[in-house]
Length: 288
Image 1: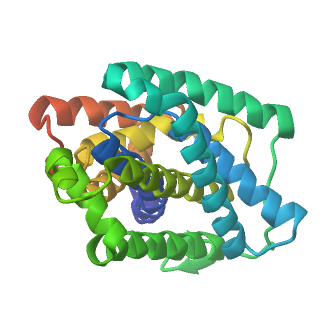
Image 2: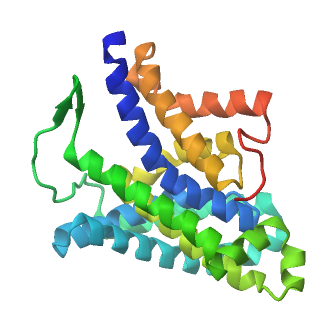
């Protein structure tokens, strides 16, 4: 089995990079709105199906379909936050988090109503995998990896150099002080829901490109996404990326000693281990 180690490491890096996109959206929402929004599962599914509709029904290439996935998931994210979650935020983070679980059930069933339960695949060309020093990797995997890296660079540049990004960082660090400085926390919250859920939707499509999608696509990835955010440190964007790499590599390397059916348990064990020895996560809880 050890002869498969290079292949598992490459697979783990690819999976970790793809997981990082929805994990960044999840942790950004937590940093600004102060509650774990578990409806990221349904928004990842919505992004995957929006990308599917753009790619298969409209015939758009993967890159433009990814934009459609981002925009549709972001729009649904803002609307669902305004209708279902924002009125509950004054009642506390736990109440809002529980409401987000109910919201994800509603949204997943809405996807099931429009698209049914059948497995669906994207319209992708059939190409041979590349073999480099005995390691196989598909051209589509490389494209997905590059798209995910481009999204990460865009997020870091936006947070560091744009007015919106600086406002989000200010509200994440100290909402009261940010409001005194003239920053509208409600508007920043809406923008965070937009960009956070947009990233989750784009991540859902990137994760779905490697397999097939169905209404439970996001639900299957919610544990790795949550684990990535917790392991890296809730509220930390670099932490979300680091946590996603830890979970992605952990899931693949676990195949050396575990059956693939136990692969999803790696995220759970990662959460337990990190919370036991470093409760704030690998990069602490400081936002961004």
